[in-house]
Amino acid sequence: MRYSIVTSIAVIAAIAGSVSVAQSLQPKQDQVQLSNGFFENLHKLHRQQLEGKKIRETEAIGGYKDLPQFYREVSYHDTATGRVLSRIQWERENPTRIHAIEVFVYDDQGRVARDYSTWFLPRYRNAPRETNINLYNYADGIRAWRQFDVFGNRMYEKCSAGERVLVELWGDDISRAQDDPNSVMHGPEYRRCFATLATTPGKFVVPQ
Image (cartoon, rainbow, N blue to C red; front, side, top):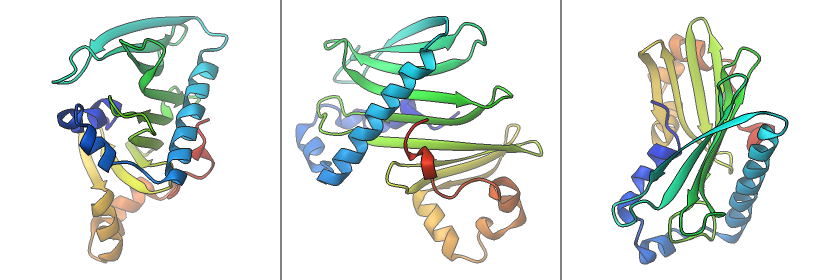
């Protein structure tokens, strides 16, 4: 299962109602501007993705232990292809306010080439809590992808052949593996997976 806004938000469900914890997570001002800019650009990309297409919407209600039924999650499907173009969680008490958003961009073969997501704490909206940029590579029966944040940090990477996971590394693992000549990162399987995948988000730091 993909690491997405759903799994990201689940991590902070236990602190959803804590104002003191939220305040301790307050980012610096430049981070606030970058994160909010990413959110605005992602919402813009969502609107662009829907332009000129016939869209089918499906929805579900979700929330947290202390905030049940907090949001209405709407998935926007391209009727012509059946692909999910984006997914937005709208706050139910503030129906025009976005709690979380995820947008998918496909290649010419209908595979996800990249996707983006970001979300806010339920009771704290100074800036998104997390920003994700995911880039994908497909070759020789493998599916590899890297996740970055809007600041360019490499957060996660995974490579699979069918159901078999070949490589999976999280942020701290990545930095340690880079310094360890005996790690999987310096082996042939890792190169097979990631040799052609960008090591920075590059221009895609702006959702497009």
